[in-house]
Image (cartoon, rainbow, N blue to C red; front, side, top):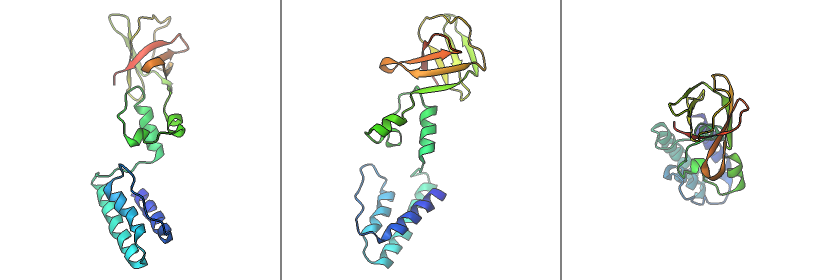
Length: 177
């Protein structure tokens, strides 16, 4: 709710500008209508437009027709979804620039919550956030994974992932959950 009022305040503060809002592809209609208020020259009519559109935006946000997230939440979501193929949403990669690439999660460093070996000797590793990673190669580990041990999972070649458990040689893994 605070984010809405901060945005509304910023928009009203910038109401004296003379430029028109350019529609942005994929922008929710309720947000575009709020920005369109800047096109109104008469101050009283512009203020009335802002009031009406802020109310509409507030209602859309409360009804979950529009969701407002900040960059911290996006980063947290990216980290929690590391290892999954994400859909092409503006939330995750709406920009085609170097900044978006730099923000992409390349590795996760954490500890093991639990681990178990399958009958074939491959490991299933569960992390503290309940992410489940399964070994996909047949490389044996010199020491069995145990709760509390450090694990680093990083992107490998061609969409694969590699996990180093407690400093051991990397094994190939895939995210299951």
